[in-house]
Length: 378
Image (cartoon, rainbow, N blue to C red):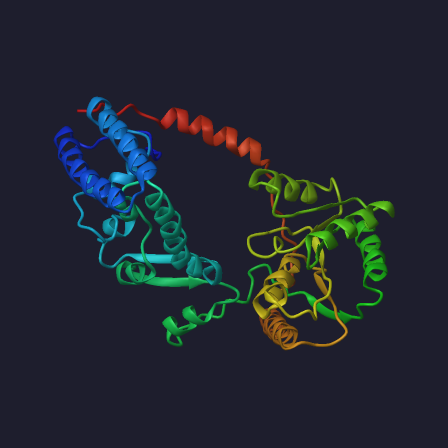
């Protein structure tokens, strides 16, 4: 097994590099003329100096910083042609599995638009040649045309996945462990903080964990401070925390370093914590993307890995999103209960090892060092 890391080995043949340099020179002259005609003297000087430096580096070393922005010439593509991707290496009967498709599918289209917007700014101000626009992700239409047969995996599939599936949907709600979706309760907003505090004390006494989701960062901070003043071991997640620290916080929650984790939009997909027995959703009746049907189902699902799983929605009224989320959760729970009774299954608690993210990084690093081979450049 060999691991190949990006921007580590440059294997483009010398003759291809020289051909690319000639094409880059031609484009540079055209671009300089356009900028001068529009009286953009600074931009003309900037693109000229930068491109000439890149050409010199490519000629002397075979690569330059940001060489991917010249990929149209290096790969021999025409203007606007899709970039090469892993799809090009899949057999005609390949299988594509898109996990958490309700999030992933929209991101596919967003990648191209975000990249295009950024590159157009670079081109406009003379930081890159227009050909840099072809160093891009696939457009959504290109992705659709290249993707082989596809399985969308999601607890809350979006409209796109449902339409593309044309009714071929596998409803996988029964778990091998027999665990059920959490019990749901709706409680009034007026006493939500005090009620939550009493629920936390009950769970903490049993060495179980609690997730709390709020609507704003300020609410998360204030609630965390309030709980801390009442001797609750609590921390909160927000968007300013980087990925590694986020994983460490979740690890510490599972290890019992603290009992309650407060967050906003970070407690939905991808969190598998069997120790969490209670999910509390504050202001659940405030309609919006944080309290949409899909968001509520995903958040409620964080308590589905525990035998005592429960979700409390604090609300003064039942919104359409709440009703749909509650109906779907109850439907799944009834189906799971019926299956367990039919098959004689007793729900069993999940036992997951808690791995230190930093230790995993050290293991990966040592494997990388063992598996890395030097590739001679011709």
